[in-house]
Length: 355
Image 1 (spheres, rainbow, N blue to C red):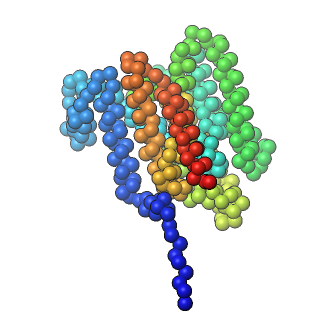
Image 2 (tube, rainbow, N blue to C red; image 1 turned 90 degrees about the vertical axis):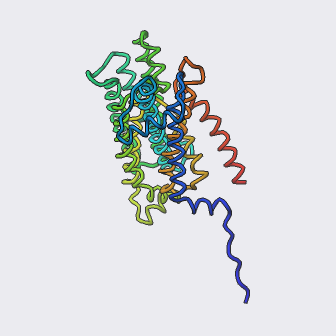
Image 3 (cartoon, one colour; image 1 turned 60 degrees about the vertical axis):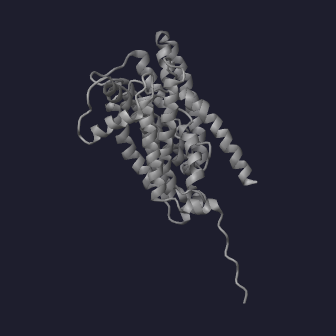
């Protein structure tokens, strides 16, 4: 009696199946190390050891110390780097969720057009001086989140009116049309505020300069709430990989999952845009890079994408701060430049792997 040879698993499959706690710890360690490096480097360089000691003493409850280094770390760099990390994590998680939901490798958090709506709200706030007392950028943040919510209502309302099943094609089409419409309105607003063109342009390119701990709390709260909702939909997103009809046949409430994911993504994107402006390519490129390590399982992909997005955006922000010091680049310019190159490399590699 001949024994049937057992199928051999390739190295990639074995590596992905073994993706567990040690891999998450490695991602977390890489994120913490990147944060330390980004806090240390800048126009005034602080030794890595000194930065670690300052942060460790603060965590251990021994105080933040005194002196110029302590002021730079805790008042300037740390809140900014934390905002950058949380924004990168949020954008990357949104991108991974949208790519799984729409089964489109070119999808990210901005596909729905909500980020364009949030940008419009922020630009109106900057152009016409809408502010709230007591909190820096409060007027811009409030208007951005308000317009993000209104954009979501408009987009979902149109999609439901045209196609009650909320099909993927309808959602993408309406998102593209809505983004084009908002772009024209943005140009109109800028025309009526010529003295604010520089501020508006810099903000729409994406920047987290001058952000404080209040913005860290806003981003952290949004990531915990809406990111938690997306993590909870990981099993359903895996089912979408075999098609909406097959997912429906195995018990997935397709319409409910679509609405839940789109609302969570829109809310998280709205918060990110309200704090840091429009930052592209993070949610598009990072999930593809992480997927090469974790595989397509969203229960591994989503949390790993959070770490990957944080690392990617922190490094891009470091380049934006130091590349042409003392002039600072908008971080969105750096992410677009690096992200476009990485995306082409990943696309070519993926195509070669399919042949």
